[in-house]
Picture 1 (cartoon, rainbow, N blue to C red):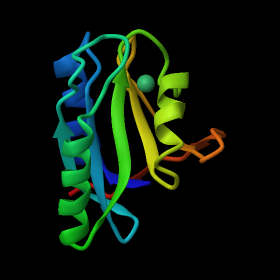
Picture 2: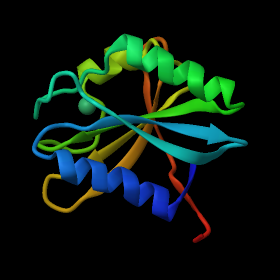
Picture 3: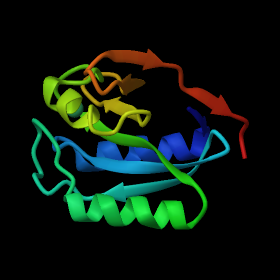
Picture 4: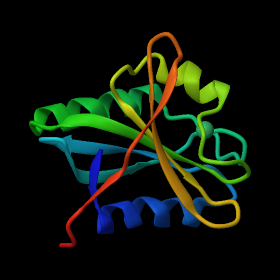
Length: 134
Ligand SMILES: [Zn+2]
């Protein structure tokens, strides 16, 4: 994924604001570049996992598609562990092949990593490319 530094900071700020609970949201991607951060509410409000209301996720997906972009990234935070997909994340991600999983780790120093989860549950790290400032 290619993302502007200020949009990535918006995601990180969301993670820090919701900590110690996990935050979640999606990123709209246009021509391979993130063009919008859409914070969502975790219905779980838990430090151990997150859950997006499936109706909200579907409505958000439709709204992004209608705007001519794509839901390219689902993001959430890990407040107690490294930003690596958990088994719960993998089970969820298998249903969204091709969508990147951006995870913000807020334990200790804030770190951000992005992953692809295949329909077979294979996890591959993908680079986060920072688009120019502005
Ligand atoms: Zn997770």
